[in-house]
Image (cartoon, rainbow, N blue to C red; front, top):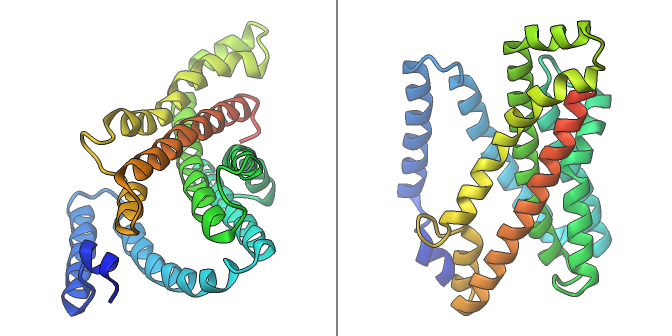
Length: 251
């Protein structure tokens, strides 16, 4: 076992037992609370085990080649877009909905990663690009999913207002945008709170990982600041794009 891994967590039979117990607690609490998420929680845990095992094996190969890393990122983007589309849609997402979700989920992340690689801020290597883009894809996916869900929930709650506006001659976009915008904007709260409280409430994983990898605490803090600021930009664009598409009936 390497020193960094041992410093954070001890890998062994005890860890396996603890993870099984925690997963069981999560499922049982959802059952007791009748949240409707017990099955999803169990499936999520099983998928995480399978996917992280596969990820470890795949990354060992793709990070050696830039072209393979880019292809892997494309796959990540599609999966993230499909996940957001499935959260926003009331039924199984269509290919068209998944493609539309690529706009808020993948485009801002891709542009920012390409820019920081072009300027030399992030090395043009898979080992640097994949985790950087992965963090952005993940946060953009969550922001898009929350913005879309909140927007549609609000549209259903205030359906009468929207129909009244349409009856007065407003376009679909004009009738929906004022309802959608504040609801979708709530998706930005987690990211803003995370940035405001960093170092006071939370110590992010990127910071800890760099320190354990031998970087100075100053370098780790600078890297973490870059990540947080980039995520604010990515999520803001994702929420804006989602707001516009929901208001126009495209999502």
